[in-house]
Length: 401
Length: 170
Image (tube, rainbow over all chains, first blue to last red; front, top):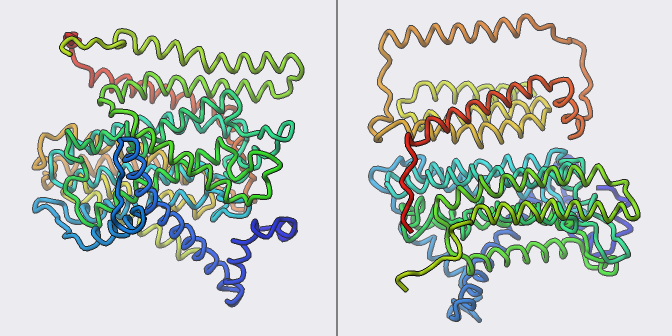
């Protein structure tokens, strides 16, 4: 952290760093780095733990409102203490392990899942001076850390010794592998245009405004907008959220790999799902929505971490809204959607971004040509592919209704 | 530094050995993943961040899934997941194959001239890696692509049903 850059910032902007330095300043010099890292870990765990608690409440409340019912409203004011009541319940419940289960793997699965889902937060820049680990290959690290979740889901499904769990694990494997591809391919254009794998540099590349109020976020370019949507769809599938929640499909697989889990292990699975969702949303904010950058030069006085939080919350609310709106896909639809629709679109988007970065020098009327070509490269394949794939299946006729 | 290396070596070799000795195939596959993670840790120790994370992404993320799929799709029941103690013929062939592979790798290692002078670590950029892959190592990249495409086609041929399924009546 550069001291000169720090002094020009507002007090609120410097506050987290100042707080950390005050605490570590009490310790001898050789201990400071360790204490600093520990403090960062505690800060991340505490803030995202709390976010997780209230996200579950927000989800239940919002789903309730959308379905025309009040949601939890008995514990505390407006149900505000509900997450803590849930926590106590999960902790005090009996932990059941099936007789035929592979005890070690059955125990390890939720632990591995939570541990792995927390790793990604290390490289997310939450604010101008707030990134726990600055890596040159941060984007690669983030997705490498995320891959082990598949393994944990498989471990859970297989170790439970239950046919529903195993079926769900196989489904989860197929789904996670299939959506890993579009997820990574939709990130590549950002790396290509920004020319770096470092998350802080990607955010820096999106700084600045045209005319003082149009930020240079990637989402405001044709390839960036397409990439953002593709990334969010793949992220939805990667975090097992509705409409891609087939692995736990309550109605067919009685909650799949979660069937044989109870008590706190079950809560850990829940926690990991929300952590994964938060991490992927945070990555989307970093890659496409300008990270901690303010949307306008006039609003820069608001500290950067507040902007990051605001963007993160908007994306998370989007996740909840989608869950309330869309029904679950069928397994064949899920596969078809990934391989025949998302993967070709992400590949085209990659070419689009390459063209965009090659034509960066175009000015005047050529700029219009650049935008028109890029926009048509997004829109035309989308419409053509969508029409071709859904031909014959829509509109649906209800013969017996 | 040497101490970290020793710990990594114990993790890599220990988990690989355990993977070879466990009777349960699923446990073997998962232990192999631990071994791969250890190799990634070794790359990190050696200062090759990019290779380390790529290793995790490819081996822990993708290859482990392929192994697990292969195990689960080829066994009918849990009882078949147990591997019996090796018979003499199989053991002999295994030793021959092992010696042959380690012979090839060993010759390659000892035949290579290593720079003994300390090399300053080059500044690695995404552009640099891309240019290296597309320039000097383009042939290797293309060959790998062809190999993987062939494997993919083979998998489709093996997995596809012999005749097209009947159209569902709507």
